[in-house]
Image 1 (cartoon, rainbow, N blue to C red):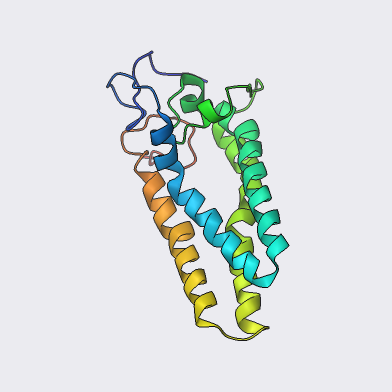
Image 2: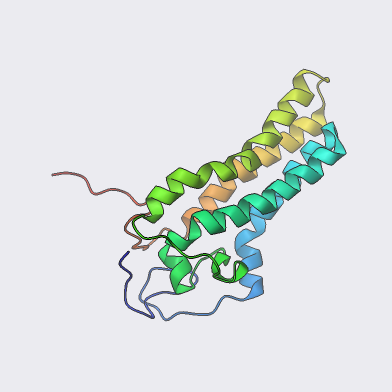
Length: 179
């Protein structure tokens, strides 16, 4: 993997020419706030069906993020350079190392499945609650808020890190059009 020169990154626009600024715990919390809100909303939905399911869901949320850090993050240039907007390079203590012969795009596509249950279990539980146990406005409201946060606000927020990014093998990076 080829990386731009040192000090070519900063935490707000991670692939720019501005000098690097260290991440603070406040930065990490702010960058992960929407995902934390998504998990709390998901746990609230799961608790309406069965309270131990909420605990299982939160445990899975933590475990899936650790596995994501281990399986995907080491291949990202932000992780290696300590400029990950989510602070995963700090949270993991950089203890995960990449294996030779693979890329971020490949590992992202190959291992993203680990995050999928965190996004789709709550809507499935809410659908069950609404369709099988009986319609409820509070459940519908929680489902709507969860879907807004998880499927619109969180992705839109994370796109802000894409502006000016030069990570060549990022799955989100637009591919050059053939002329």
